[in-house]
Length: 330
Length: 251
Image (cartoon, rainbow over all chains, first blue to last red; front, top):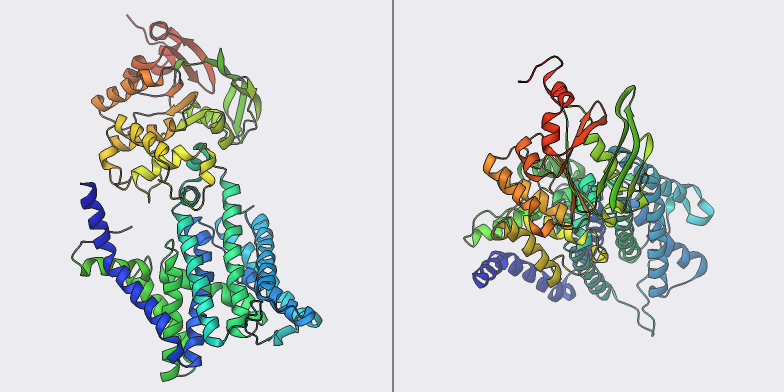
């Protein structure tokens, strides 16, 4: 009985796993033969995918509609850029630690102000704080170079005389993003992760079971800040640098759209959303230049009409159906 | 030994006094029922005891310690558990996860982030024991919204019992249950496994009250105005009056 169940579960996921492995194989084998612009698109997918997965932990699991995650992302990225520009620090590990610590501190500030409120008001508070980061980046010209942004255009210096090439950077980002995704996914399956779902679902009940709900929201926000900060650090290398809009509301909104597109409360959905979005953007822009936002709107509306719950759960379900097992939602 | 002592609780919503000088106490392991007409303040009293609402004045002592201002989760950790009148489960999750969440709630393991929720065999065994006691172990992988109402009430009780409480506050545990189901629930509550658990049972189901309670508190207009054994309460004229109105004569 037990064995049969395991077998069924295995079979259920078989096609999805096969698909995942195929994509991974492509990502491992293909890069040396791909053009620089395609590699750049793939890295963009990964970096924004990571930020979206991190957002999903608070947005999808903890019921916290953060509209200021780009601010935290920006703090991570700007910290790295400022250290390079003003202090000529280039060691990747030092920069990564500094960027992530700064992002977590920013997340702590966002959370300690925002968590006094719920729902829409939490969203507005985080929105305001995110915009504050972008505004600071624009106004403090002597420090941040204003609207021109900071463009170090460097590859990670890993110490021991190793500096990554463009393809090397891609593999590095791939590994970091996949490991981060696995960690985030594992968190959602842990007692801590489930407690986040429970407090979002029914706060009073979660408290009567002994859960300190407010502390848990705070911790979840810090974890999310950690990974968004990491995405910000990687972005400096994959993008070449940063300018203020990357920390502003357009980027925050984009991250939310990626999560909704891919599937709220699924972690991997963030990566799927990022892939669909960036690939469509790339190919549609080749055919019809400068009309991407219209298509984005159409894609978003189609998703909400026909794939509510996001693309990732749909793909997973379609894989199961293709193999002959019925609809297994959830 | 007194486990719960309530001293002159007052609570008001605007000008409406819902609790007025409400005082009573419960011994360790004692099964007490709280009855009273609709709007007497029973659920409000449970919410105040549980820390969901802060009282305007008055004091609450639990296991000899004042808990009037303690947050809900701290009371749970001291050994106070609660079930709800309206079924209160975590709807997107399956039955087993609901119980595991309840079991982890009062333990350090609830902060584990990288171990799966069902990793601990000890906790899994406890979950099995709890779910088997109400006949839900076979259905553990089902979504908790897809089982019958009676089963949901049983699961609700499991969640409350999971923290191994010293006192259990039950708000209408038999709401919507059939007579047989309600009797079964009564048996579970009196069962030897819960001998040392004190009970404060709020119920309209008078059969369940008589089946379970050693002592009955009668509440009306925010205050406890009568208490005694089932027999004493049945004979009490004032109790009859608040239920049936003044001037009704009983033969």
